Image 1: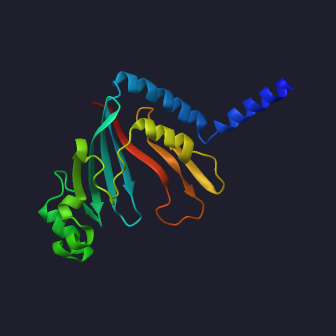
Image 2 (image 1 turned 30 degrees about the horizontal axis):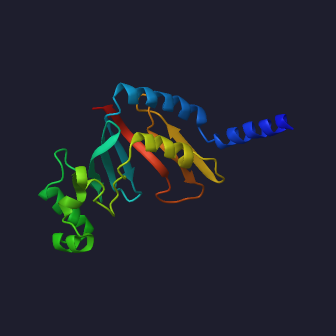
Length: 198
């Protein structure tokens, strides 16, 4: 009887630790643990996002000794208008507002912020997390990203295709899923284009 109970516990624990792309994830997670130690858990990383309408953005997070200390957000493409290399400015704002078909005043009334402050901003210290209702990624560490990948995004599901990539020198670059027959903005998960030590 004890052997049967022990076997059932082993099967149960194994089943709980089963998820899509487990081998690739485990390899990347080992790289993450090494990177975390080598960097003294101090790094920056950039998450990206986009919509089918041609709007794209990125969120840069700064982590020092395991704590989020900064978050930067910028639209890289807004309604077909690309962000200038030097950042959003009056000319690029006018161009994007023209595409939107509204004035600066109309935009501010609808969004609660002027266009330049809406398209690009930075938070530090007590300001962290104060920009809400935006496309920005929440201020979380890579520890949380790996945890969510394993426990949420890579879980086995019916009628979905699951993705995992580790193109940041072995560290996670994409993890998530797309439901079958979904038409627009279907990816649920994370995309990371850069991870580097501070």
